[in-house]
Amino acid sequence: MKEKQILRKLTFIGMIALVLSIKKAGLREGLLIYGLHSSLTSFWGQIVVNKKLLSYPVRLTPNLFYTSNTFEFVLFPLLSTWNYMWTKKSSKLGILFKTLCFSIPLTLVEVWLEKKTHFIKYKNWNGFRSFWTVTAILLVI
Image (cartoon, rainbow, N blue to C red; front, side):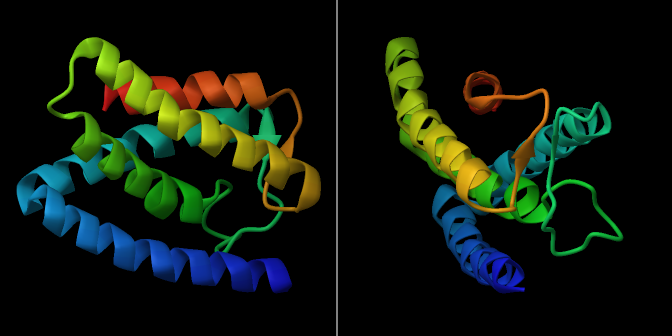
């Protein structure tokens, strides 16, 4: 129960930050980044969960989603919007470096969450796969 409360709070805070970030990025650009990112992450997340590579034992809507909608529709798109705003005027090398500044800490947090909580459980998955997946998605966006 405590973990669901944490997810609710993270979702609420993330949604407020996402709205503010979309406004700052510009409504059209911000919504485009959010929509692209959410679509790509949702598609990829369904594949990973359906292939039983990882699972999300604690979810806000377990009857509707097998993936973590807090992560896929709020927190990761928020980070993607920030990454886009930070990298949009950078060189290719700058984009790569700045993207790694997002993907490395995100991966470390995910690995810690996998070990210490019930938010995510790796089955045939690991931190390196998460790192490469997160980095690739951020670069594609």
